[in-house]
Image 1 (spheres, rainbow, N blue to C red):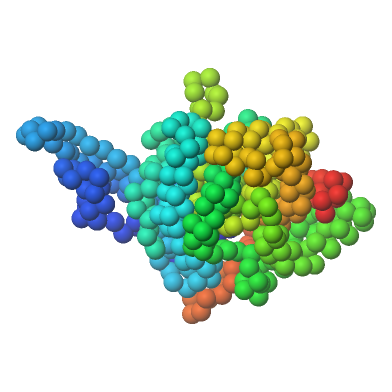
Image 2: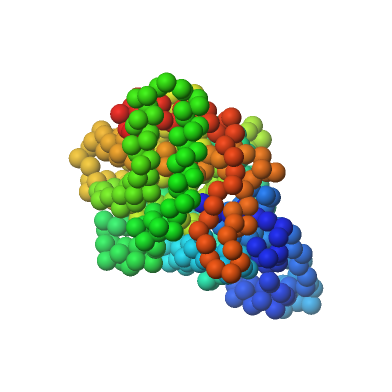
Length: 428
C-alpha cells in the first residue's frame, strides 16, 4: 500500500536530487578508473504504477581507460533511483520512512546474508534465489538499483493481473526465496534473529490500528457494498464477510502475528507491479525478478501466497489452477530445502510438506481478502483514475490516509468472487 507517482512537486520528489559528484562517488567504488561525464533523468513510472516512493530513471554516460592506455572506452549505465517523497507531512501520514528502512535493511543486510548462505550450499546460480535487481546504494532516503528494462524485463499489465504461466513462474521463484529464509532460520537461528530485528511491520501492527481506522472503515464499507450489490440476497456470504470485517484490521494483525513453523521473511507486497518477467523469442518466461521490499515481514509464507493469488488472479483462473500452483510451489520448496539441507527439519516426507502448505494457505487465505480490499480498487482502475493518496490530509499536520478511488465493475466482481471462494472453501 502507498501512493502513486504524482506530478505535484509539493507532494512527491520532483527530482532524484542526484548530481555528477554523487554518482561518481557511488560507481568509483567498483570501478576507480571510471569517469561519469553526463546523465539524463526521467520519471521512472506512470501514474498508478508506483506506490510509496518516487521513482526516477537515470541514464549515465562516461568513459574508462583500458590497461593504463590513453584510449577512452565508452561506458553507459541506466539505474533506477527510489526516493522518499519530499513532503515530510505526507511521509508521516503513510509512515513511509519506516517502510523505506525495511527496504534498506533488505538490500544491505538480508539479501547479502541469504545469498552468501545459499552459495555455501550450491555453485549453480540457477538453483538459488537471486531474483532481485543489483543494488548500487541503499540508505535512509535513497535506494539505487539496476534498471531491469536493460535486461529486457517487463512488468505485467496491472489491470490484467497475472496469467497461469506467470503465476507458476512467480510461485517457483517465491518458493526459492522462502526456502532460503527458512533454511537460514533453522541452521543459523541467532544470525536470523538479527536480520528479523531489522524489520518493522509496515502496516498491520496494533500500534497502527487507530491511525488506519478511518482508512479501513472506508475499505470495509466499500467491500460490503460491492458484494451486496453483486450477490443480493446471499445472506450467508454477507454474514461471514461482515463478521470478518467487523474487526478487519485486528484480524489482519492477528494473521501476520500468528506463530507458524513455516514462518519466513516474506516479501510482503507480492502483486503485479512488483514482479517482472523476461521472455524468449517464443514468449516463454525465462526469468522472474522481484522488486519493492518495503513491506517485508516475518510471518507465515502463506501470507505471500494469499496476497499474490487473491490480488493478482481472477476466479476462473484460480478454479482451474489453484491446486496446480500450490503443487508448483511445493515442488520447488522440496528442491530448494533439499539443496540447502533443511528438508528433514521441516517435514517427515514430501507429502507431509504439501499437507502443511495446504493447511497454512487455508489459515491465511483471509489475509488475501483483507489485502484485496485495498489492492483491487487500485489495480483494476485506469491510470487516469489511479488514486493520489498523498493529496489527502492537511499540510499542517500528518493525517491518516484516505481512499478516494471508487470501485468499478471489475473490482466488484473480483471482490465478490473472493468472498464466494473463501466461504465455499471453509476459509472465511
